[in-house]
Image 1 (cartoon, rainbow, N blue to C red):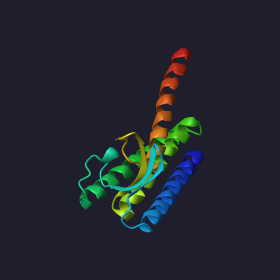
Image 2: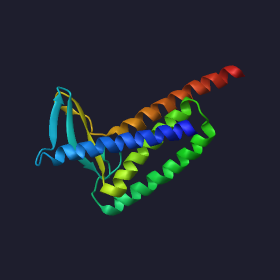
Image 3: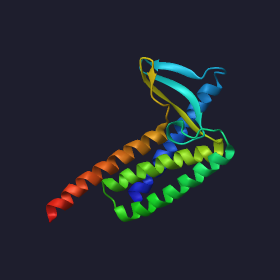
Length: 159
């Protein structure tokens, strides 16, 4: 459990440091809301008051608090799962998801919205802007799914 929680804290801290830097970067450039970094990547500043991919992004303060509270409940459930998962790869994957969720909870509570800044695109087609916390959640969920599939096949062979 300790390794998973350590990874969670590190992920949330790295996410907050990146957001702090991005906010300072754009604050020093009034009126600029995007910078081309590579032909397929822009640094942008967007505020997400909704959930994943901007769903339910109504801008209401009440919604921000509801999503923050829901996220706290999910983190509590993940910590309970982490306790049972032990110290293997599954624990690290759960730790990534917890860290990402914590990074976004901090934004909702202290900034009123989640700061998104990574904009990958192919030509004119842009993926939804996201942040490091979102990336941690996606990578963690991917490895949880892999563990679930491999775990099932390992358990099936034991019979």
